[in-house]
Length: 357
Image (cartoon, rainbow, N blue to C red; front, side, top):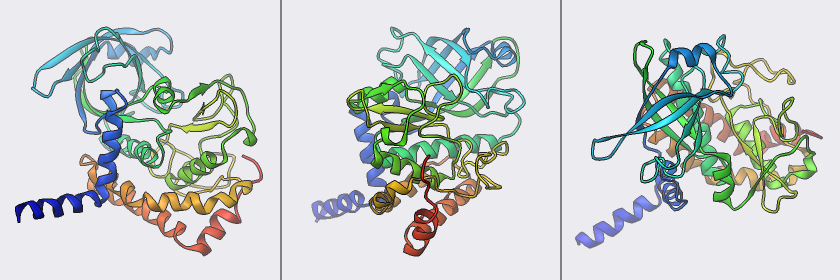
C-alpha cells in the first residue's frame, strides 16, 4: 500500500505545474555551470570601494574588491574580484544612485565553488538605495528572464543573489537583492551555437520561428524597448538583443535581454519607446511581422502549452511580495486571456502586424 501511495504521489508531482520548472533545473545542472543549476537565492558579500565606484562609475577601469559566498555547510569562501559599473540608462546617476555592476573573477579561484567556470558576469542591481520597492523591480525583471527560459533554451540564464554590500571607504553596509546573467559565450557554448557580431541586419536574416517567439514574448511582458534588426549607435546588432547562429551564417536566432522597461516590471523611470504611439509601458504593442502571421498559431500554442510552468515560476519566487505577485499574475492573466480568444488574436496580432521591424 505504501508503495502504491508513493507511486501516486510521484505521478501527481510529475504532472504538477512545478514539474517542468524542476525539470529545467535538472537540465541546467547538466550544462556544467553550477551557478545556474539552481534558482534558489545565493547569499553573497561584495566588499569594495563602493563610494568611489558609484561616484566615478567607470566603464573600463576596474576597482579591486572581494566576493564572499556562503557554502551549504555555513562556512564562507572569499574570492578576489575586480569590479566596475556597466550599462547605459541605469548607469546614469540621475536614474539610479546605485548602478549595475560588472564582476570580474579570477578563474583559478572559482574552481570548486558555486562560480566555477565563470569569468565576467553582469550583475543587475537595485538602482535606488533608499527605496525598498526597487528590489521588487529586480525580482520582476528576474521573472522575465525566467519566463523566457521556460519558453526556449536560447535565452540568458539568471541567478538571484542576496548581496551584503560592504563599502571599504567607510559608508554603511546594506543588503539588497540582485541577479547575475549568464555570459553570452556560455549561452553560445551551451546551445551549440555561435555568437554573431554584426551591424544592422534585415528581417530575412532571422530565423522566422525564433523571431515570432521573441516578438510574442516581448508582447507578453509589455516591452517595446528592443530591435531585432537595428543596433544602437556604435554597437553591434541589435538593440537589447544578441544574435546566435548554428552555422556562423544566417538564419540568426535573437537572444533577448534587458527587460526593465517592460510593463511587467513597471519601473517608475520607464517610458514607452518614442517610436510608438503608446502612453504607458503597461500598454502592450505587438511588433511581429505580417510575413510571420502563418507561424502565429504554433507560436501562441507554445505559450499556452507553457502557461502552467510560467505561472509556477511566479509561485516559486518566495521573495516576491503580495502586491507584486498580484500585479504580475494579473498582467499574465490578461495576456493569456487574449491569446486564448481567436477574435482577440485576430485584432491584436493579425491585423496589427508590421511589414518590417
